[in-house]
Image (cartoon, rainbow, N blue to C red; front, top):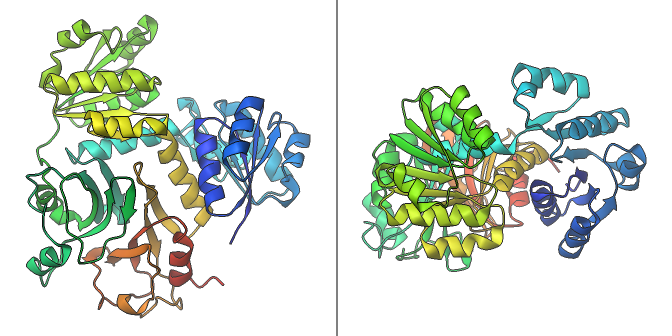
Length: 452
């Protein structure tokens, strides 16, 4: 059901959140002090734009605060976001989401802030990005990872090389080989600029970007079928020393991984060296080939370029790949650069905006336990709970009359995953992992819940 949403902050995150909400036909208003940003958003999206500060009640009123059901405050200023939340709640808005980046405002402090400023959800793009990179490093070679159902089901994306065991095979043939106990299912295929929810007569081709849902215990076998490695990552180079790198380095060191950071700013490099035990920090530019050679670049299992400069991230990853780095990960902010990354040979690209927007969309949809957007397509993977009394309760998957853009890939019952079949019967409280193309998520919701 469409809701009225006010997005405060028209930057990288806010504009993407507004686009996602608008695409699902919610009524969206975007507030920002930057008139140029608003003009661009207004030209690209079917949204209301309001120029001004979100901390001014009159500006929020112009954006429709009195009829608003959700406020999403995602400016780059934590204090502004908190004030927006407080104003919204005082005016009777039901839900508020705020972006918070300051470490001192997270953890226990975050819970206290939610109570004081009445925010329902606190999000952090840097933290969300670090979490996604950690998931990717657990599955070397995968271009996309989504951990669903408390880790019992894994969605793994990979671009197929010519020597991958499943290349050239029809999906029905692959399925027959694994009867009767399926351990995985191909949920979507991106081929060129198109993304498909595949039928059983599809044949997998070299260079297809496939997403597979599998049982956790089968993840290594599935990785081999996709042509991926299964060895543990032990040596990681982080190019750029921002918050994402700091969060990531601390988590990796706690796992016993060797971490090296390259940071251009001398003061920040010193700060990282002092605060991160066991991490070696080099001061210098990430595109300086001599400096990168000094780090012995080719010995790293993974190189992640995390600066705010897309072009530098891309160039650094390409150079790392050329001298032997096993896997390269580039953070990109301009999604238009994705085609360049793919053709140039960067292994993985991800965006802070999608990681953050996924958290917002999960909250907006309410009944969705998890949602992940694939960066190189419009497809999503959703985790939803089957409600008792819903159309799906006690129904066979084959009888659900799923729309063309939806595939149920896995069912998790009492913590135990099974790959969905046409004859699989759904029950209330089951968790379902579904693949969906744009516009079809609402139909999945209708089938699995009791909402009108």
